Length: 369
Image (cartoon, rainbow, N blue to C red; front, top):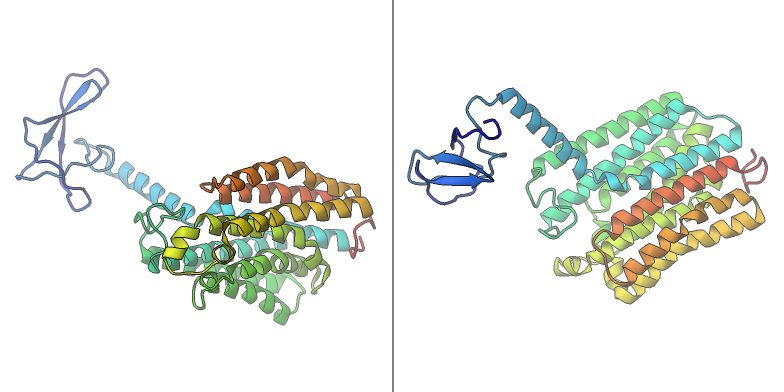
């Protein structure tokens, strides 16, 4: 119907299975939409009234366009289920390890960097889906949870399982490609990669480290030293201790994301019968721990800047953001604290990577280049 037209817009309800029951309507009932009047028809005594855009289609609507829109919405649902806001926790360690490799050997294989990033992202995304599935199956997620993928039936449990399996498979394919492209020994590659893959699954699946207050330790190791060492090793072809040391500031900041998330969910987690570190230490010590994780990396950068290279002051540019997060945490404004901490993690990590790139030759400890 064109705007301003007085011709009635007639709808017929054909699929009641996906609609919420509403009042019975007949040809004389009308629904006002701004200045237009829409006639609703029902063939029986009971009609199911739903939103016009979702369920009621005017005659002659192009079914192909509707199918395309539904497909796009489904794809968007899959992307959102991955929690892409958290991907800085895996991408920045890959960038850091690769840059350390570049500074030590003077070259960087961009194809290896790309394959490595896809492998780590796949495992990270699959781990998020495993977390979604088990939190839902254990009754932890609810209508007020941050992740409502299954609670709101955006996706079905079997969709999440299949998608997670596909991502784990993609990650394994990438690991096989890395073996063909890198000089890293197979046993070392398998040790690091499958160690990370196992951690991403066991965080909530199987043993369920998250539910017994060990999730923080798993994340601290996996999305810090392990990821950085993996990215470095596939470039240089051997294992080294140096990437583990450089990963510490980033790992602490990454752990702040998880801790802020668990602090926000303390009450719902306690009601669900699980135990997290935030529950064990309580709100006051959770605040202290969050500040430690947030500001200790800046102290490390100050030491590096004064003793080795002035370029390490770059990450200090993000301190104002950290103080803003501290105030929000102190006032217990937890609603978006995890996402905001993840944004800080991205900024801090990028400045850290640039600081290493800009450091004069020979100024970085334990790095030859």
